[in-house]
Every structure is written in structure tokens, then in C-alpha cells.
Length: 56
Image (cartoon, rainbow, N blue to C red; front, side):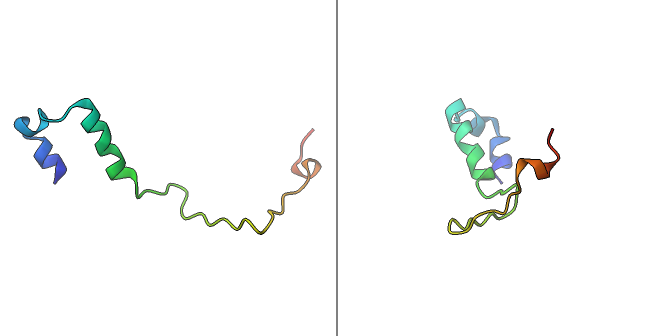
């Protein structure tokens, strides 16, 4: 719907570059590229030592 409104020159001319930058978070705020991440700050990650990672 927003694309249709901004396709009209009289509406598109009303937006400044600052206004256009403000639109970007509206479309990307809900996106979680890595899925849902739940942190348990009371537990430790079981990460091995550097030797077990195949390092030099």
C-alpha cells in the first residue's frame, strides 16, 4: 500500500530524505535473520578448549 502511495509524484515529493530513512525500520523491525534467540544468563555454554578445535 505504501508503494502505491509513494508512486504518486505529489505524495513522493512531500517526503524528505530523513522521512524516507524513517520508513526503513518499519519494514525490517520484525525480521529476525537468525531465528529466535533465547539467552539463559544463568547457564554456561559448553565450549571446548582451543586444543579441541583443531588449532595449531
